[in-house]
Length: 227
Image (cartoon, rainbow, N blue to C red; front, side, top):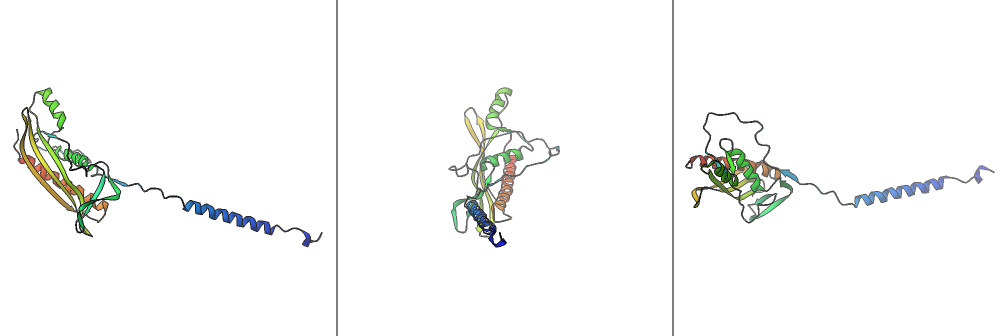
């Protein structure tokens, strides 16, 4: 048999290669049609707080204080969204950042920060725990601090200019058997510039504004009548 009469393997190899290429293309097409994996929102809080025990000072401790839960208007701040306003376009609309979340609702974050800051120089009790303390030690109840968180947003005054804005109403009362006796009330409004026009910048500005607001409340408390 001559060489020309032997069957050639080249056509079958070429067909096999084309089939493999077609299958690979189909596989790539199927993968590209799959939905993208959802992007997880970035979680924020006010940071770790003090990293070491503050040094002991010779200043006398301030009177003990009971801290109530922080109220919010209408539930708009009861979720974990990081909110912003376009003050130059539609200041009445609160908008959430799609990929940014607080680690807990803002009222809880603020309350946690208040207790941390005020507790540097005074004992801070839970509102309910102070009642138990009074019953066990027959002591005078500490004054009760109530806070209303009315605004907590990243406010844009222009497309590239923004601030972190917090508005609190602080009410100090004395709890008596006859009911609550008003000691004083103060409205606190603080804003701090945001270093960038995005969610991380808004979070930094709101953290700074919150700390400044707590400092103002602390100074006000120190001027309030003590018992």
